[in-house]
Amino acid sequence: MANVKEYSVEEKLSSLLNLQKIESKLDEIQILKGELPIEVSDLEDEIQGLHARETRIEEEVNGITEFIEQKKNLIKESQALIAKYEKQSENVKNNREFEAINKEIEMQTLETKLAEKHIKDANEEISDKARLLESAKRNIATKEANLKHKKGELEKIISETEKEETEYSEMSKAAREKVEPRLLASFDRIRKNYRNGLAVVAIVRDACGGCYNAIPPQRQSEIRQRKKIIVCENCGRILVDEELQEQAKNV
Ligand SMILES: [Zn+2]
Image (cartoon, rainbow, N blue to C red; front, side, top):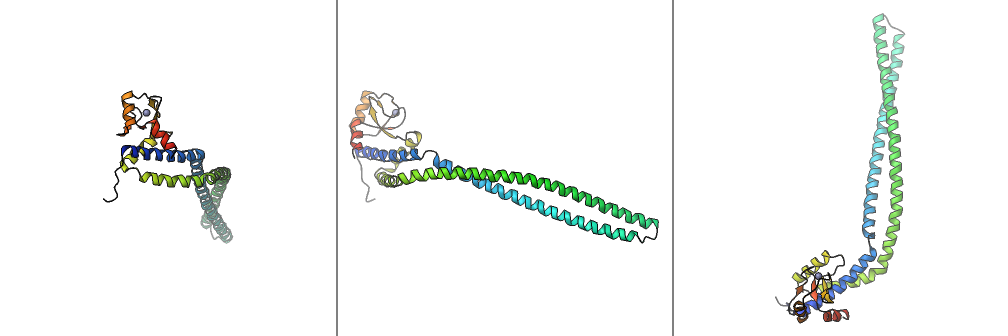
């Protein structure tokens, strides 16, 4: 291992403070964007879902339309048969034949009536689907207008902060390379635990600058010696003395 550099505790703390400063800037930019990124992606998901619903309804309507066509053909066939039987009934030879033909006509008439009922029901179903489709389309239009608005807002913020964000992201990358992996992992873990994203804090009026828990004088002096990394017993944040914090501010 050629390029391993041993850092003093003071150097480690300074690197962490520097990284904290950069990450806090990036946090500020995220706060500016607020809930917009989530709202935009939620809306995009919802619109996608509505489009899928729209397609499904249209497919169902196509299925019902096909069903109606089948029933219409069935009616035509029945009517053709009825016409044929009526013609036959003009030349019947006996009563039995006459009754047999009449029975056939009766059956085909029933078939026609049943098919007509099916068509009527299917048309009602299509009307229901059309209403659903209409409401899905209206919903899509509303959500798309909302999405356009939110996207515009987000894009405005992004364009205003993009340059800064890129700069700080690159600074963060460089600053991270100066922190050893284990310490970096702790830093990121602590940051995630707190809404203000502060993992390194200074002593403020004899207390932890993160949670305001009092720090005993003996511990304060240990912190000021910068000989080891000390974390707040209450909140787990890494503690530094005021002077080191001030130095980092001016870097
Ligand atoms: Zn604390």
